[in-house]
Image (cartoon, rainbow, N blue to C red):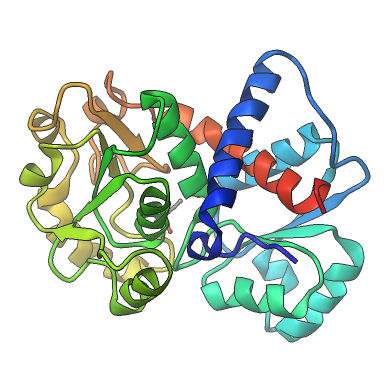
Length: 305
Ligand code: CP
Ligand code: NVA
């Protein structure tokens, strides 16, 4: 059974098809057409962490495709606490046609997929954010007509968002650069997995944001302190300060370069108002694209068997 657990395990053709189908679904919606391949299907959402985009876009997307969604907070389900994960997975599989999880540990989504009998969609874990990366790829394709050959410079943390984006870029032929403070690059576990499953060429990791953005087609950033890392916030604020995406840094990037951010933005920390609201920013198109790529994912996992 196919799942969307981690982009690194999704074949390149599937990634390409999902981005292409998302563009079609976006155009259909703009034209007022709305196919309903999820009629009669029920999708559960279980979220251990806060969310605006992921929850709202999944609930809207399921509704637009003719299905029904049911939302549960992690606290009320008590994942792995009130009963074991395998028992939860087997039980939920009797009620639902698919499940979207936003959880602290990647192992939780992987275990749900192993023990349940319905498609599992990762709505963000500590290690990956595949729905975000698919939306990022669609946004880059919309900006430039293609992803292949573009240079994507992620200025920030080697986190869930940048790990998934690095995989997506490599798969669709873009050059990915992570510009981060020493100590905040991709870890060995990710690099080993990347070498095994994506490419023998490591993603480029640098520590000078000014040099990095000079050849960027896209400059991307995300929060410096991800959900679950709140205890490290003060240390991270100090270490990441030279990596703020502000007008001075953008002045070093090519004029046609676009700005992406997965949102939520911590304005005044990783990105300034003038950049997030500036003419190069496409962050709200990028947010909208979550809806379209996730509809493509739901169609892939549910409507096409
Ligand atoms: N980008 C993203 O996943 O946003 P939310 O945390 O609001 O879902
Ligand atoms: N890296 C961020 C992404 C939020 C969408 C986090 O995990 O909090």
